[in-house]
Amino acid sequence: MPVLCAIFYGHLILFDKHRVNVTNRNRAAVTEQRFNILHLVCKPQKAAMRKNTLINATLATALTAVSTFSFAAPTVVPNAPELSSRGYVLMDYHTGTVLVERDADKRLNPASLTKLMTAYVAGQEVKSGNISLDDDVVISRNAWAKNFPDSSKMFIEVGTSVSLSDLYRGLIVQSGNDASVAIAEHVAGSEAGFVGLMNSWANQLGLSNSAFTNPHGLDSDGLYSTPRDIATLGRAIIRDLPDIYPLYSETSFTYNGITQYNRNGLLRDRSMSVDGMKTGYTSGAGYSLATSATNGDMRLVAVVMGAKSPSVRESESKQLLSYGFRFFDTVVPTEAGKEVSTARVWMGNQDELKVGVDRDIYLTLPKGDVNKLQAEVEYNGDLIAPIQKDQVVGKVLYKVDGDVVKEAELVALEPVDEGSIFKRLMDWFKRLVASWF
Figure (cartoon, rainbow, N blue to C red):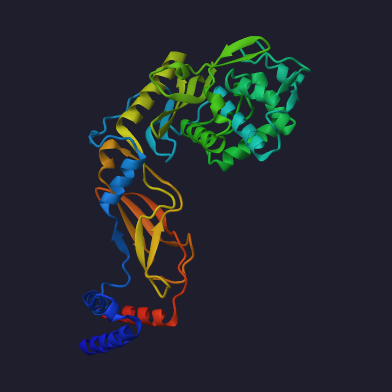
């Protein structure tokens, strides 16, 4: 081995005579460069470095830049509040992490929470261009028939023409059963056809414990959902229909001279930053409420089903939201397209490759665990050029106290072309030497 190194060093000297003008450069720097190359070749680390811990200072800086949490937060999370509703769940919007749950998968009557799915299906039709909020909808007798006593309604009349935009507000703000049928008929031609779309979308969204039998949520055999499914649906509405979601924050709507107020009282509660979702009630289902609220960059979705009264569903929703914002944080340790590390590349026209992730990485953690967060990168063996941009080259492991809390794919942030014949020969020799250690 020493003989091989000496021969190789001699070749470096001859090569430098042709490539480096020593009279115009600092001789000490050239000598140091030769020594570094010799040290790399004859005293290399293992070529296949599979794991590399990211610089904790870099991770801490990223966390500070994208979140507003306090590092003085408590390290112990108290027990979640125990509520009287039949089932409930508290879920982080960005990550889907469940912070609190009880009977979250229990099949319950959703009542007017059904209208969340009605609004989602109609919103997807608007988004796809099949219908428009400017459409005029002629009200059928079937839709008008939902104006029976004790039914929540928009007070639309048979044969009148109503814009889909107004019907949407009548559905979301006023919880109009008549509006829900009018929308269903406009989208699919009939209630039955629309119900088929509702269940198809439920399947696509992974709502495995939900079945819909009508667009309004009035008591019906076979109609059911769960707190978890409703929260998942709420996340989908916010994520997929950002142009329509602001309608959920409207506190009142006037149609045909009649002003009605949104039954979601938390929209008017100044102690909370609730900006939408839906109420539900039938005598069989009890009182239900889905809410979403923000605190800084963190957004939570809370669902309570089967509460005893309107005041109970609101107070229990507030307890869930307050608990989540008080004891948890959602942070972005790694942003899409930002460099998180550099990797050694072999046989390429460059020796280093910037690596990162192709989407923002969100983590929901107890506040006391945020400053314990560490990240490691693992490469899929040696990285051999050519490498394409966005090619998966490994993974990032996010850990708290040594336990992995999330994994993400590590991708190349830039392409690396194949190097020259001489460069590939040099890298081949270096890898050969590395394999001897």
